Image 1: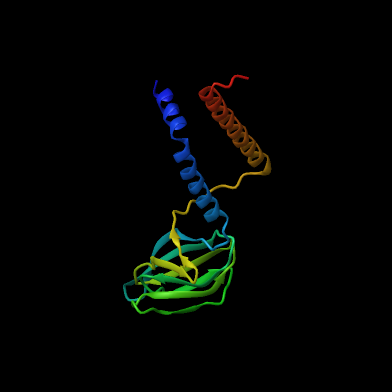
Image 2: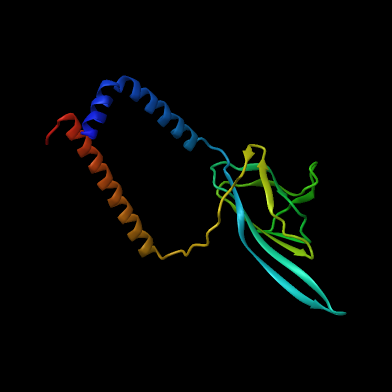
Length: 191
């Protein structure tokens, strides 16, 4: 009964529903296919080491591995990575030319000239007797970055990847068949 009411409402109001769905779909496709940088950043891992020094002193050493990725289809320019605390040492992989300094808020920053589309940059920081870096923000000339959770994931062989892709395609096909059957039943079309 609920499906019949919903279908009846859709059939009566299709002249209002279709334009709204068309605008939403157009906006989504335009946003998805527009060439733009999409910066993602996060923390991959960190570790703490306490080293014994002469004269009964200890050194607290924090090591952090951070990542910045441009998942967009256009290069990001003038990328500035702002940290809460300045690290004792910093390095990037792949090795890049970068500037370091303090911005107007007093936070430490690392500035890269650009990050290519689909490029992943790993930043290693070491902190001796100081707190960890903690990324505050990532900005570029084209916009801001988004903090995402980083998951280490195993990469499977071609056979497993192919099998998983085939199962996903079969699932998509089955979902489309169900959708077509739903609308065929709703519109009274029998094949």
